[in-house]
Length: 340
Ligand code: NAD
Ligand code: TYD
Image (cartoon, rainbow, N blue to C red; front, top):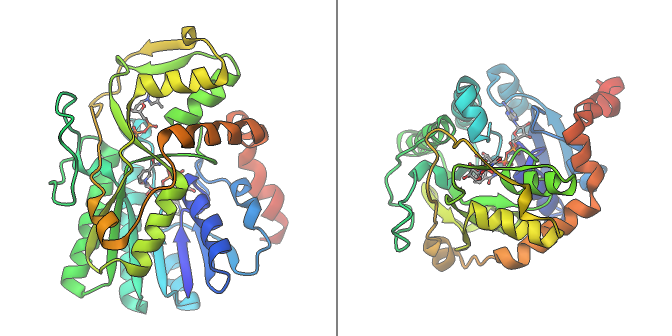
């Protein structure tokens, strides 16, 4: 199979590319990524030079580019990770979220319609369901929970999901959608909570905790997300949505305290700061459908995934120090400039 993975230079996309390139040597993996601030080719060093892997730089919202790529490559499968993904940035500048997350998705869907496809898979998020109250631990998001978004980020992701489902119903496009809870693990950009805490704590810098730190997120180790997507693409039913999560709910304060403890750093580094506007209170997934229908099971709990993640950041200081210093942005020019 020839598989286009979009956003494969980002956090989850690069972990997925590593997994697929190693797991399926007979498949051809084309990584299509624009290399925005969140894309980092250094994250793809483990697969550089693999015969079943290629990188193509481009914008999923650029119709002429996407159509000419599909014309040339005729992919069997498209898996769309590419997105603007940070809620705080979406509050400051919503428009790019509409362009990439919505128009980028419809552009890919139109190319799939024109050139034919075995499966288009949309990587979505639990955030499309909005939030749950903190005092109802009995409530979980199921695939039937209505879409009810809070932030420009989640609204753009929800818009994309609705287009994906509309293209299935209206044009019969073979699509699937996965909605996953918060991920953590290697190659996570240090603007997001867990890598931010690790990188700042290692430098003895203050850790900003929004509001009172009581908001709850449901954390999944990134490779467990990758195996779930692989299963859905291969065995999941067309036109279906699958929730992914491992019942690892923690308050933000618990997450920060756990990381500080593991690093031997004092809690006095914690600084409570003004809350995020519209801050979602609690996310919690019910993954029964993917577990019973496809037999998916996560390998990691929060307790086992966090030490592995911290160790990775300790072993790969160069990777995140280059990001914090901005040096990673010249990597493409250095590596590829002369070849373009
Ligand atoms: P990320 O921000 O780390 O990576 C996004 C990647 O997309 C980057 O490599 C970036 O260069 C690329 N990109 C951005 N705009 C593009 C464009 N116009 N054309 C081509 N490439 C473009 O994001 P992530 O955390 O890896 O998330 C990947 C996907 O998973 C997103 O769709 C996100 O909504 C979804 N998701 C993320 C989480 C999470 O916890 N991070 C949880 C559930 C779902
Ligand atoms: P984040 O990693 O941005 O993911 P999301 O908002 O998509 O869930 O944030 C996770 C939680 O941590 C969220 O409730 C906001 C909170 N947070 C902080 O308290 N401080 C921070 O510096 C950041 C980035 C997030």
